[in-house]
Length: 369
Image 1 (cartoon, rainbow, N blue to C red):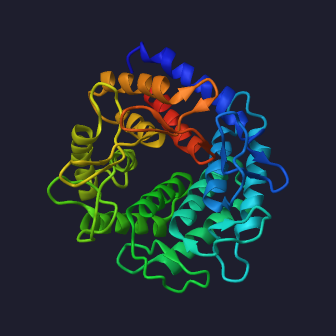
Image 2 (cartoon, rainbow, N blue to C red; image 1 turned 90 degrees about the vertical axis):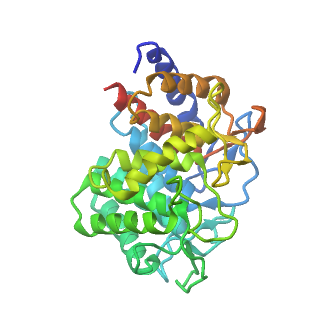
């Protein structure tokens, strides 16, 4: 990274540790339920709770687990422990196994369906948390989540149902890109903390199936729905996210899927990134037409992180880091979304976003070496 980027990186890290993380210990923390509120407004007041999602709890578990052992974060281990306990207490389905999607503001199960996105994040968070604390109970929850995914969600072709009913009955959802990407991320997190032949085999089968079922042949882009689905599209942010996962994995680097996403990176950059402002568009048709020009902070973060693994990207990386700082981060937190013209279109701050910032900054720190 050019030396000019160092002050910008130090600045965003200070903003993260001194402002963003404390929000979720203070105003963003419901001490009664021991869960993060779903979102804070621009003045750090919780939005009136409608629900609490297991996925949001898992993302915050990852956030605080990632801080364990870092300088000045003595609070992280206890906060992560509370989140881990809450994940089990509020969301685990003792009758049917697995985890509910959400609970209501009183702490009662709300949406009792079982979705892959939630279970993928439970795998991801527990793998990271177990890496830090090595407690048998944490590994047992990780194992339970992996088992449920393999036994209940798997469809026998390398892919997985996106959502099932509470009792695991089919809802005919079929596979969807985003939960499958986060499942791959969860598998990779598991393999980073232990050797696991079953998880590695599942990861490779998933990569093979994604290549066959979700990759547009012309541009190599990862579509949001399987090939042939009506009204399909791709998201530049997801191309960058997939590229990072594939490029950073010894298991997945060199697979046909890795080759596709290397091509997709260039196409997404060409069609979905503004060369002057650094804005990443939300949704594009396969032909490169912008369908939704909304700029989301997570997509900005994923592009920035992916650039750390893209040779010859030093100047672009520096531009993107400054764009994140200038357009999205501010003295009270962050802007979740800007519209196509760069105006703030969503002012609340969801509890799920710090996960994206944490993984992005981790990538930047590793890039600096």
